[in-house]
Structures are given as C-alpha cells and as structure tokens.
Amino acid sequence: MLTPSPPPRLPAWLEEELPLARLRELLEQARESGQRELSWELGIHLDTLDEAFRELGVRIQALEEEKRQFQERLQGEHQGYTQLRASMHELLDLHPFSRTISASFDLQDIPHALLDLSLRLTEYHSCGVFFIGRGDRPPEPVALRGDGPRLCSRVQAQWEDGIIPWVLGEGHPVVIEDEEDSSCSFMHIPLRVRGEQVGFFALYCPKAKGDFTLGELESLDVLASHAAVAMENARLYTDLETARQELKESQRQLLLSAKQAAVGELAGGVAHEVNNPLQIILSRVQLMLMQHPDPGRLSDDLRLIEHNVKRISRITRALLGFARHNSQAEGWGPFDLAQAIQQACTLVRHQLAAHLIEVAIDCPEDLPQLQGNVGELEQVFLNLILNAQNAMPKGGQLQIAVRREAETVELRFADTGIGIAPENLDRIFEPFFTTRSSQGGTGLGLAVSYRIIANHGGTLTVESPPGQGATFIIQLPLHPREAPQHGKS
Image 1 (cartoon, rainbow, N blue to C red):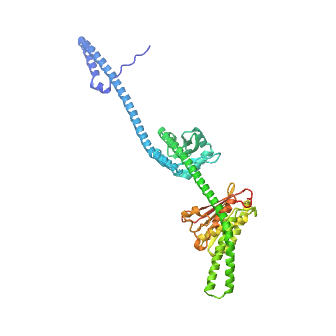
Image 2: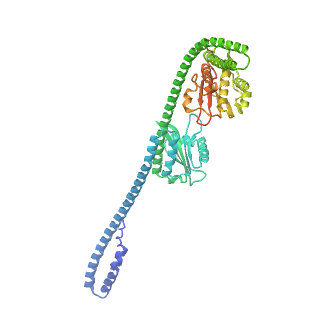
Image 3: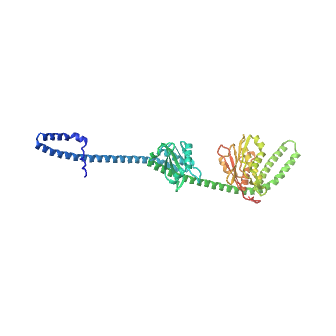
C-alpha cells in the first residue's frame, strides 16, 4: 500500500507570520472546556484556512522553482554573452594579423607574426614554428619565442618518441600534459596546406591540460591555418622571384657571351691589322734612339713615342689573347685544382707581399682532379688575384676558398678592398670596361676570364655589398663536357 506524501510545508517566514499552531491550541482548550459548538465551528474554519495556506505554500514553492530556473537561464545567458564578447575580441585581434600576413611575402615575417599574436589568445612560456622535411629528418625551427633551446630539445624528444608524428596524423590541435610538471602542458597545432602537413606550431603553456577552453583551441587552430597558407604563398612567391632572377641572369650572361664573341672576332682582325704597322714604327723608333743616344729633346720625344707604341702593342696582344681564348683542345686534360691555385699565387707572391696583401687558401685535400685547360684556368686565377691587388692599394687580405658541392666545385676569391660600385656590377665582365684606364687597365682581364670559364662549362659571377670588398665566384663542373673543338667559341 502506498504511503501518502506529507502535505507541503509552508515557508518558514509564512508560518512565523500566521501562528496556526496557537489557533489549534486555543481550539483544543475550547473543546476541553465544553464549548463544543464553538470548537466545531472554529475547527471547520481552521481546517479551511489551513488548506488555503497549504495551497498558497505550494504556489510559493512553484514560484521559487521558477525563480531558480530563471536565475540559471540568466546565468547561462550571461556566460554566453561573456564568451561572445571574448570571441569578438579574438576576432578583432585576428584582423590585424590577417592584414599583416596578407600583405607580406617574407617567409620570415609571417611565423614571427604568428608567435606575437598567439600571446593574445593564450599565455605561454615558449613557443615556436617548426617545418618538417621529407623522410626522417627532424623538425627545423624557423621562429622561436621564450626559452627556444629548451623547447627545441623537448620537441626533438617528442618527435623521436612518435608523439608529434601522431599529432600530425590527427590533423587537429592536441594538448599533452608535461610529464615533468603537471601544471604545464604542450599544445601542438598542425600546419596544413592543401591537405599536406608542412610543419606544426608548438606552445609550452603554464596551464594544466584540462584548463584550456575550446575557444582557445579553435582560435589558435584558425590562426595557425591562416599562417600556413600565408607561408606557402610566400614560399611560392620566393621561388617565383628566384626563378625570375635566374632567368634574368641567364639572359644577361647570354647577351654578354654573344657580345664577347662578336667583339672577340672583331678584336682579332683589328689586332692583326694594327700589330704589323706598330712593329715597324717601334723598330724605326728604336733604331733612331740608337742613332741619337745623347739626351735631348729629340731623344726624349723618341722615348715617349716608344713608350706609347709599346702600350698600344700590349693592348693589341691583349686583344689577340681575348680573341684566341676559346678553350682549344690543346692542353685539355686532368689537373689538380689546388696546385693550379698555388701556381698562380706563386707567380705574384713577391708582388702581393710588396703591397702588404696576405693570401689565405682554403682547399679540401680530398678534391678530385678536374678536366680542363690548366694553363687558361691559371690565367683566370692570376687575373682575379691581380684584380684583388688593385682593389687593395693600402694592403688587405685575399681569401681563396674552394668547396665541393653535388656536381660542381665552387671557388671564391674574396678581398677586403674598396669593392665595386653598384652601377658597375652589370658591366664588370664587358670587354674594354675598366675603372683603371688611367693606370693602364685594358678592360680585358675579366672579360677573358669570363670567356675561359664559360668555355669550361662553368660560371663566373661577382658579389660586392657596399663597403665590404668584392667576391668573385667560379663554378666549375666536376664532370665537364668533352674538350671543345678548335675554333669554337
């Protein structure tokens, strides 16, 4: 049998205002004193009043329940409003970042902007952007904040333990508790471009794993995704700009080679035509000097004529050399590059010492033999050494460094001289271009060198940052083509 539930109690404050217990006590006293009719009538009215008050208590309890539910809804609405305000602030913070990365094509600026803005979304001790390569190569940090070395060490350990590869496989932000300090945690956010993982964003935060809000994770994920797309666009732009510069340089070298070939043919013909009359003039002047050995105006004039005829003769010989240097098959074969460099330095050792120039050679011992015309290459090295000497009239240092790359050998001739003016860099290898015409420069040394290197299948370029000297860079193939045929240019 079911037990009936007790009637609802009146609120305490209502029971205090309505002394029903006292009324019942007075009713009981009336019954005991024999006033039955009065007690009976009072009992009926008291029961009616009691029932009314109980019904009132039920309604009051219902109103209190509605009040409690309303307060809960109000609190929930307030929390939603607070979260909405926080989301609006996060969006406002994301807006300047969006403008920054959209306007930037610098692959270094975008990761640093990501690190700066993430601090507005969550607190961290350190964070970094890491790129991943192909295969088992470890992640490479491209931007760091805070204790970068320690973060890199921890990230490396997590990579080796397979934690970060697992995070990348998940494809969404993952929070990992720090085993050394449970009050801190790592957050790893994959960086994706067109569905491919290119890296990840790592944060070390002073928060327990469960203290991160869903809003923090979503905002940081959106931020990282935007940055990943921007970095990919910057990389593509950089690749495009590099290709454009390489094409521009190839066109410049092609035009220069064509110009050198044309000038070489012209120079050869002119030099032959000029050289024979010069030799006749020179021999007659020398004969007249023998006939008039005594000092005087005539002998002085003859010596002046002799000096200038010899100068013209040197220019014609240089012209003939420029026209003739097309890496003919004669002299083509294997040679020791280090020995060729030493030989060129030996030829001008005393000259360099007199100009207070120190030469340092850095050449690996395991360098294989190259194929080429060692005599012509020694002339190139000699031209570059003398060019460095002329650039250091007050002395300095010449560093000759040799490095082996995949399929080439790179030689760098770096001096500490006055450098090359920016407006002259594009013309430095043109025939007859010289900044030393008053000192007897013919403007053919670098042009000849350029042509010799080109005929060996290599390249000759120059770098000269303002005020930092000049560096001439030679790239020679480890396995060149066959020796050129005689007469080919």
